[in-house]
Length: 624
Image (tube, rainbow, N blue to C red):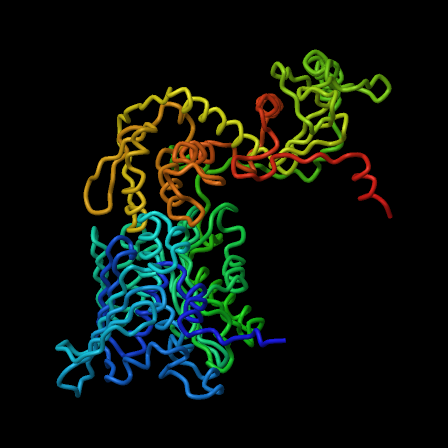
């Protein structure tokens, strides 16, 4: 039998590695900027064209590379950061794998110009698809300039599935914000073709204000600081009253590296229990400084996942630090027992403002009524129940003896509409005898198949979405001008997303006018958006544009068109929230409207709206 195992060429191995390391243009910027930071740069400039698909250029004033080093840098697992395996436990640099540069040059055209401080002339290197095209002397400034062109030119499947320019540009801006936050002592600037952002070296607090100056103020932040032998934590958390429903700014940094850590995120969130609404989250910017030997960053090529040796011990330290900050700066409401009582009526003064004298009678017995009072109560005893017997006699039995069944809640189903959840011969309008609300979240009623539990928020969302889509499909969208335009402030990513969908928003009835800086005015809204908040809807749409799962302008399988997306966001904004108490009429209206729809069982995103608990399932849960 002939040998069949072969060693892959470096170019193929680099393309395989690029699938993990370089996921999109933002990944290239992350790797190149981190290399510049490791090179000791104090000024890093980024230029982007066509959201990084045409050009990504990173220029730094770091130490530069020699003629030999610049060539070796693009070899697999070539690095200046470590020498042996033990160095992995003392890492103080951003990179160490030696995979980023060879992965980038395997899927693009790369040009490097670099010079060290003691060299009179620099080196120019051109690599196309892992093949060295040119290496020659050149005149250039101290430092390194790397230009990446035609990203994924030789991997058409990856290039095809890149998102629209606005989505990719939004991801670039998000990555830039993370890099700028971590490296606040370095000047960072980016020019994406339409906007330029220049951030000078500053303190951590000033860097936060510079990046999010449009939607985050200094007075919203509370400082957090604790220093122990195990960990040093410093940074800021937001006041509870400034918690956000969408896009909370949440950053965890360890030893100068961004990380995702659900365990520490949960620790911060636990400090805000009972201080913020359940559907909101606080902002936080926290830096951890630990012994490098107590963490492992060699988990994933992106180096965003980090394992802590003492994470359980760090939890109480983090919780204590955040709670101390909330309490120290009066972010937690307290009761002051030293102040004088407030007058009962602030409009009165002097003796009139004092509380009435209740008096004290040692012979008073509340359980012993006087004869005159007892006679008066007996005389009026029957009249107390006249309203009860006349108003509620049909629904509630006064005694257990004459108690009868409660009246059934009947709902008229739409003609010809049936739903399989009730069985083959059951109309959707047939519900049980009682309709109740559980935990202010669910509507519970009975069917022939068992108990029907309906999520009130998802049910109303489904109803409103279908209503909006019917108006859109009939081309019956009417735009209504706003008498008092509402101002809306957009960050860099949201403005890029607005460029992508501004024409579609206009067709859907929204009117937006540019005011100044990052401020816009909402001048018109769709007439069908009756209860929703226009500002909330627009922000939801722009945030959704930046998500990876959204590809606007296409109606492919599993994708939303802009009309569907706008209708969904309007429905989410106007739908009943969980935790809202409903009346019997409101629950009846939701049930009847829901089961008049063609598909009442799922939301537009595919989440279940209802569940049926049959007798068998209930019996199994009660089995001992």
